[in-house]
Every structure is written in C-alpha cells, then in structure tokens.
Image (cartoon, rainbow, N blue to C red):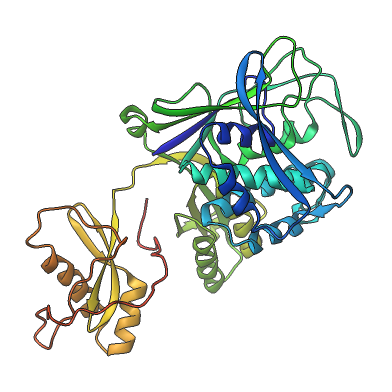
Length: 432
C-alpha cells in the first residue's frame, strides 16, 4: 500500500499540497491535461522552483481571468462530475468539497447544498483541490496521513471581512485532527488545505512506518522569519509493521424504525453505488420494544461524509454515528471464464474461487440454466484451466479466458472467443 504523509510544520494550503506532490514527482503536464477535463476555462497553471528558508521547493501559481464568480456546492459538484475524471480522483475531489460545504453549512446554519463558496469556489481553489487529487492518483497514493497541523494567530482578511486566524472554517474542518498553534500572525493553514486533510487523511501523527520512496516540498507565497514556509510530503510503501495493523476504514451506522423494507433495500443499493465497501442491515429491538433495523456502512474515510449524506437522504434518519476501525481484506484478483460462450468474472483468493453473481445471473437468464449451475460451471472452468499451473490467479489485465463447456460439461478448448466488455466487479458478497 502506497502512503503519502503530509508534514504540516508551517501549515498547509491547496497550492502548497499540490506543489509538494509535483515536487515529489507528479508530472505537471499530466496534471494540466486532466484538469482540462473540467468544464471551466480562463486559467493557467505554472510551477516554479523556489527556496524557502534555504530549502528547495515548488511554488504553484494558478492564473485566472475571473474575479467575483460565486459558486454553490452543488455547482462545483456538477463541474467535477461532468469532467469524467478517474474514479478515485473524482471521489477525493467531491469528498473535499463536501467537507467544505459541511463546515460552511454549520458555520452559516444552512444546508450544505445551499452553501455559497466565495474564495474556495474560485477557479484557483478548484484547480488547487482537483489538481492535488490528480497528483495523488498519478503517484498511485492509496492512503493519506498527516502530521499535526500548524496554525497561526491574529486576524485574516476574507470575503466576509476580517476573521480570526485560524479561520472559523479551518477550525471546523480540523475537528478531530491534531493541531498546534504558533505565535505568528500569518494564515498558515487555509480552508482548502484543511479541507483536503479533513476529507482525505486517515490519521494524524508522526510519520507512519514505511519504506520512503520520494519526498517533496510545496512552497507558500511568502518568506517567514522563523521557519521555512513549506509543506512537505513523504511518499512510501507501508512497512510490514504498518500493514499488520490492518486497513483503516470508517464504520457508519443508523438505527431506522420508520421505513419500509423496500426503502431499506434501496438504501443498501444506493450506498454500494456511492462507493461503500459493504453495506448491510441488522434487525434490532429499540426502546419500548419497537422493532427496527440498523443500517451499517463500511467505507474509506474520504467517502464517509458522502455516504452519511446518502444514508440521511434515503432514510430520513436524524443522525448517523460512526468511528474508525480496521479491516484485513484477503488478497484477491479477478479473472474471466466462459460458460456457454458467455463471459463470467470470477473472484480468486487463496483457497477460493467464486463466480460474480451479476454475471452469472445474466448468463442464467440468457441460457435458461439454473443460477447455481452457471456459478458451478464458471468456478469449475477456472479450476480446470489452472489445474496444471501451480501459480496464483492471473489479473484481469489482460483477461484469461477459459473455454466454454459442451453438452457433457467438459471444456471445449477449441472454441475460445473474446468476451464482451463487462462492468467492474462489485463487492456485494464481501464482508470486510
């Protein structure tokens, strides 16, 4: 698992986060090309090597032509969704703006979807946030961590006038995070930087155990007297000690006693479609003997707010609880076989092969075979193909094809054909 640890000894801003990742090796041209997918224009992105306190870093500058456009949270969500960015980039960017909307909504006492972004809705802030998510993807970062986040004191200027430093939105976003204030009247941590950490960081503290592969520094716009105005990122591969602790995830839950079974089933489907690792329903008995259900959701921290919103909107619940836990998912790969000339994906893990339900159900409908027979034939086809190879399952890239079975159930090795394109596998049968 690839980690990125942000060292926020002088705070963090959106441009500093992006600059640190570019300094660590993210290709700026590729970042630009992916940013051009956003349906916004009038911007240019430049990077410049600079020194801050004698340490070399990269300063990012976004040049924009607009000045006073105010966008809502829903507007920005639409821009990101329309861009058709890679899934993880889109999820991280949406989660970051959702964290901003939630924080601003609490501060201004209005629903998150009605929040109007001022500074953080400008093109430069959009480029900083989405660009950071793109750079994380280009560097193949699976998990983000952070040190304690440094903030200053005094007052800062904003679209609302003078505000205390750190800004109220920064304080709201950093709930639950490790922070430290220093006696410096400079806005060290901005709302965009705080939002990136609030949405993406799975933990705050010292550098995690890892084999370091790269590091980079993103520069702030000014020199500071007593410290280098930089944000550092350290990239690496989690060590065995780090991996043995399990994969951090969020468990969200809500107790529901006033919706139908159809609504419960639809909610589980909506949660899985929104990116949950798993979702399930448990019957419970509440106070006064009322029968009810608990809906549980397992998800990456970056999607926790988004999935909590789905849970609230679909069920009408007045509250969602949650906490960080760890999971130990078994290593798995996806392969493809053919049953009666139709492609079926199979999940392969140590000691187990399981046909993908959605594919098997489609083949059952098309061929008239019972579902259990299709799954059995698919799993047997994979076993037959790999019976002579004492090797782990091969990846779906490129897919390995097993032969279709004839009337006797024996694979016909002379009639291999290319399968049709398939949608990515779901985790509807996974419990971790």
